[in-house]
Image (cartoon, rainbow, N blue to C red; front, top):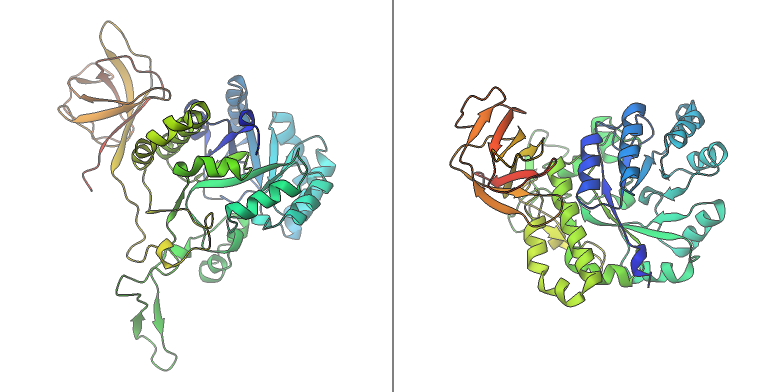
Length: 415
């Protein structure tokens, strides 16, 4: 079992705002993508300037930043790769996340002092492959999502003590083995292994018989639907003790394409759960319903423990639709400190809300609280009853102190 002081909560950061949210809401480290070589080409990702700002923000708060370079490279991808790694190192990144052996070789030569982590895309399913990567110079392996806790524990026991194990504990699941999908490239011309996945696993499918073109027959299981590849979302927040006992050091949250509200909500819930367990296992057990309630306020599919307790069966899929469960809406983020005399703080609106509505304030640290919106003004001081315009700046009256980056949410009308 790994020492308690070595646990890491690792959060996704698709852009600079999400990086700041992840750091402030409790992540020990974040993983980001630059403008090349990562597997989230549609995320906003980081320019060199934004990467430098994000790394500085994280380091000032004692947090780490890992940069993804986990594509499966083709020959042309190596042009300029060594120089890119040198730039990332110069910006102060704490590590690279790599899948491809050739990319690994370039990184080892270009930036021999940088820490390299081996991505789940590398299909790390056994201790021998982990030991091989260690011998080549890697110091962390992200285990494949297809492993059970028992298999991970055996890997932990058979690899060097100074090699870390990272594993996904929350977020969307890929239907393809270790995330190596060919469906997207074949059906949409977008290569999932180079960061451009079109997510065909979430599409609705029918059968067509060769001699009867145009006749679409539904694929049904007990008349529940036709989303045959559509997995539930992973959620291990109620199984923190088992993750620790298996020897997982870094708890990884999926979601570089998700919203700041998702990142803040999920990171904060896991931060509280981990800290509570390390402080008092009995407290953690008592608060299990609370963790689930909080984490479910971010949009999600039904939850699953995936492969951790055995191979999934048909119950791990969502057959009826490909949409999210959304119980709460993200309606705003505090942009300035609270004024004690007026009770006002500036808020950037993210979804419509109105005077008279009950909302919740979710701070980065501490308990959330409910309030009724009583007063709201434009930046010019004009009284308004609602905030209908996207990213509108408003002055909102709060009954108690709020801080920059505190988030506002309300129960969704779409429930």
